[in-house]
Image (cartoon, rainbow, N blue to C red):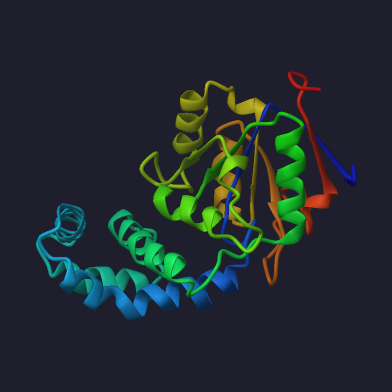
Length: 232
């Protein structure tokens, strides 16, 4: 692995969309699949506790408005709203199990994850998609079942990805100081929040990601070498 950027950290935290996986894949495949199925999926499962909880939460967020209309509207605007993310995860599970698609992961990202795991580095995901959706994505990936690579997953239940407090909460949960965590993402707002929390950050430039010159950048995971004093 290239050592263009050397990082001393005890834990690796990773985004998915635009970092490990193509953003266009998520929008063109996953979002399109859930958007076409939201109305029928919800209608067929009214009365189920999980669906009713999602609808209740959505209704509360729009002050008693139509929850189904709200869910569809959030999907169309690509808003990271927890009840929508939970519903998308349920719908995508059916798609994965039916073989409608597999989770896309960049080959360089897969190779790095395998190498870091073999070196003893704990790997965690922080994504706006629900924990359930994250696990399914890696279970049914193009590279096979990758669930064993990860020590844990976080979604927006821990806090928004653009808030420093979320990264502090993750650090407290995993028992690692923020300064000993490195976070890789494509999103500049997430970089700012993680940096403000004291987390080491690297921007991953994929497709047409706009570079943020304030932070170190890579175009391939082969360009970063992460080593921990604890496991070296």
